Length: 145
Image (tube, rainbow, N blue to C red; front, top):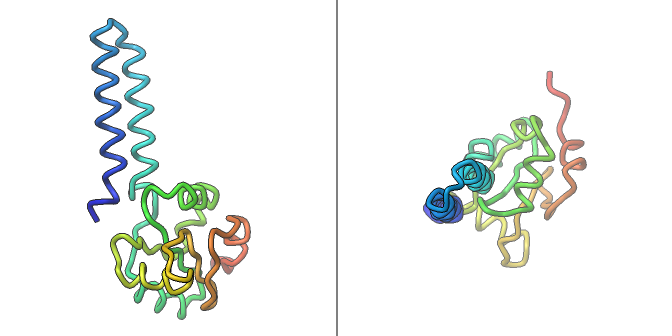
């Protein structure tokens, strides 16, 4: 779980150092803007940008019941972030599994990708799809009732 926070924390620390340098040089307005940019980047690359993750076994069980796809992802993955952002509010209707927090999820991804942990891997009706188009994923969702 800790490695999911390494990049966001590194961004905050670097942003703080750059901000301190700018303040010392007499540019407090620029410093605030730079710090906000680093904090935003940290947030986007953290687990906070994604819906709450569940375990792979639970996600597969829920998917069997409601037919919704399962998304295997990890923090810091630009393709996972792209999928999350492009899905918008529809992302909440999927079952999300963080492979860095769930060993069973990592194992499922490796099984689907010849031993590689390539994410996002979306499981739809038992078939894995690696880095699918977000519009296609949205199309796999049944209309909410």
